[in-house]
Image (cartoon, rainbow over the protein chains, first blue to last red):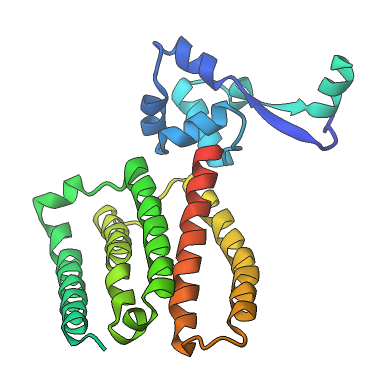
Length: 82
Length: 164
């Protein structure tokens, strides 16, 4: 089911880094060909990576992209919280 | 008109442009090329330099209007900014690609460009209203606009980059 807006992109990037020998943001940034600031922004949910970058990151961790990035339905979250 | 200053400015600008042209031509062919990276630090320094150039230029426009225009002080103030732009051109040449920034930096610059364009309208309108009825040198419009846009763009990029 495709959720209605508003939606956000959630991620488990931090967990993946920690599971990967406590990899630093800088090391992941270098592996993905971006800056550390970009990785930081993705982890904080402030920046939505492009499809290409998401696939690069998933390929690096050898996981399906859906295991790392997922849609967060904010409406459902608010309803659940209230 | 300040003749010594004008001569110095012309010499300095010419020398910088010639040196930058030589660097663009020679550096990619030498061992220095491997040290030309760009990167996050270079990106932040570029924006800081843009902000400094904008602020200095605007201050000089209002405090030294005759020097800005008649002695070409404007071009002297622009030199560091131009050198930074040439540096990024060099990065592109060394890497043999136009993609010298990552996708987030590209997105931040696009957002800052739109913001600079939108904000420049009320700023220039304000300058227009302020200058009516005042004896303002007509040639000041250009340095005021130039340094305003450089300041707005660079500060917009840096803000977007650090906040998001």
